[in-house]
Image (cartoon, rainbow over all chains, first blue to last red; front, side, top):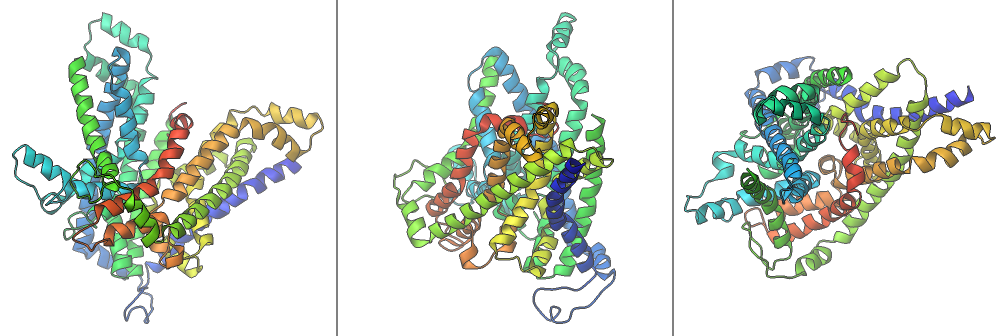
Length: 290
Length: 268
């Protein structure tokens, strides 16, 4: 019984710290979202409760809708299509190359992983150099091919940050697929080969059904991580030009720390928290089923 | 087919490799630009970073915060995940899944409220504040990871030591600690890297000159060195490399250990 007491005591520090990180901020966020709390300006000296005013304003705010739609573009483009497909393709190719002993697979694996462990801020710096209009590596390459310069961050900023984020985050999906592919029993492939199934059908009718749950969990993981992406976009475009690459997390940041409106920023954070909790609960449910 | 795969590999290596090659070339170049070119080799950028930009100070700050965070995290993770692994408790599963839920919520979601709380508690611009928040933000995933590790160690192991007359703690220390060292190593590396590389909360939690860390000074260099229009790429790249080195070294050293543990939910 003395032992049980130690075990309960042992969990307490963890609970305390997580309260400090998640529970307290969430409560403070909800509280301040009902106020006009500000860091600077005349509102700062004039603190008062607004009730639901922030939320009403938020739902009428066209910037909010723009950032919301941008978030969807960013998630669909860079996670659900880009990272997922590219990660899958690289994993399948590496898996195939291992069987056929094709050289270069180790380098591909290593370099994809390198882009992932590389601090995100550095990735942002690297890609802003790639995209630079006058001297950027990308435009110089196009020049060599005889193609006219493109103002990447001016004319297609969303696509540019999406590509940078695919570069940065593909490794996660690749790793999941690589270890998942190893769990599919080889005998099934052999049997289907004898039955005359081609590679695509083998993938479609054997690999996918077996790995379906892993795929869904992976999709939700990258969706949530990408919804919360901040640093990469912030480093490359700071959300601009205009609001063209401002996703919800950048919108919250700009509201709170550039316009100094903490209360309004908190209201955005609360909405984001609700969206994340919904996704998170779906994620946990799927995770438990496995 | 083999040739096709090789060609795709080549494209992948170019796509993923060029940004890195550019970074490393630039840092050792006398005068780099946004275009990748072979460097006119020099180490003067690194010397300038240390001489002109007071880099040692930021290096000390970052190392200090990351090391203390690592120690605190390892202690808390070891104790609490062992407790969770062994305790019989009605809400154990609920607790574990709420950890996973917390882990899945990106930090940028709660960034504004975290700023608010830290300001009220006067924990901005303080080592204590950074260490507490960096420890707390890593706990959910690391506890989840380490709890799975302790589950694989049979309970009979420590019970045998208690029967042999060891006290509760002595039994844990002599029997459980040695077998859990690989797990503790993973937790140490991940928590150090987590604290070292964190570059988002630092933007809002620190603005005093003497508290700045490596990621923050890299961020400022990226924004300001040489004015907005003409970035001094060679200098910012050197900042980037100094920021990146510990990540690369630790990652390469512990690659094998990390690869198996980094992905939650995939069987080992």
